[in-house]
Each structure stands twice: as structure tokens, then as C-alpha cells.
Image 1 (cartoon, rainbow, N blue to C red):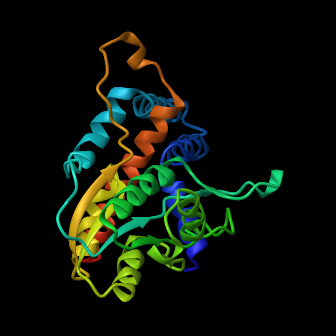
Image 2: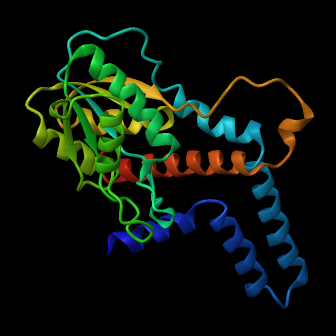
Length: 252
């Protein structure tokens, strides 16, 4: 199955697309049964509301983000800092160069900082994970941003073909001779990434960043539906499904 088609199917499984399809299919299939159609719409609407409020989004994300503690201070000896890509922004439509998206940039800032302080290679890994949407390779975009942050070109290794976590880990294994790496990536994604890199023979020092859950004041506003919360819930659902899928395949 072509990779782009797999990604499209994946997006259709996640909210809000999956909930919209659920409601539409419910109406179409039960068009002669008004009560059942209303039930589909009601359930879909309730799920859409719940996934778009902060308490539910935080509930789904917290177990993922608590899987590893934040890195405090500098770790001991390491052979490299590895930063997987998380997406890029194509600005060619306004004649500007591509940049890492917010999530990738947060990972990159931490990775560059650690590589500079420890004087070890910075490995930027990730190709085009959304071929139907962009022509960019995350690793190349990250490399240009890292150069702008003042890290020497000779200190950076770039891998721009891998498209998912398993391919990332295998690609880095081919690049590095050393086994002890610092992995700088999003907190919600760290659990899966650590296992996959460990299975390639690495000793992984987690350096989680880009936390989505935060301490919040108890207020009525938490129960107002917001797009930001729906996005966070979708991220969490995607990660839980990914953990289940890769475990089923025997990769976790």
C-alpha cells in the first residue's frame, strides 16, 4: 500500500475526521430510522465535545507525558544527540524558506543546546512524513535552522529518508557507531521512541520536551470546547493507537 495512502487512512481514523464520518455514516445508513440517526448524531456530538475540552485532553496525554522525567542538568558521556523531525512549514508561497514547525523547533532547540554543551554530534533524522501535503524533508529543514543557531556544520549528521519512528531508529543505527544517545523529542512520543531506539541496540537517555499538559486553574472555562484541546486529544489518540499497532506488530 502506498505510504501516502496509508497516511490518509490514518488521518481518517483520528478525530475530528473519524467523528464526522461516524455521524455522516450514521445518518446515511439509518435515514429511514430517525431515532437511530439521532442517536448517532448525539453520540458523535458528545464525543466531539469531550475531546475538545481541556480535562479530557489532559487525561489522555498525561500517562504518555509522564512516561519519562524531564532531563535536568547534563547527562554523562553520550555519543550523539538525536532529534527526530515532527513536521515543517513550507513558506515558498510567500517566497520564504521552509522552517521547522513549532513542535520540531522545540525539539531542535533542546537538541542543539545539548550538542553544543557536550561537544558531540547532532543527528537530525526524518524525511517526508506527509508526501501528499509537502515536498519538504524535515531533517534538511532542521539542519538549516541548526546552522542559524550557530552549530558547526561538521557537527551535524543528516538523515532525510526515514518516514516513521521505526525507520528513524534503523537509519540512525546505520549512521552511528556509538551506542549511547540522548533522544530529544516530544514528551508524549518519548515512550514509543525510547523502545524502538533501544531495540536497535542504543542506550537511550530521554530528553523530553514540547509538553502539552500543563497545571491549570479549576475554572468553568476549562469546559468550553476549543480547537486547541481537540488537537491535543487527537495527538493523544494517535499515539495510543500507534502504541497498540506497533505492539501488535512486535516492534514494541
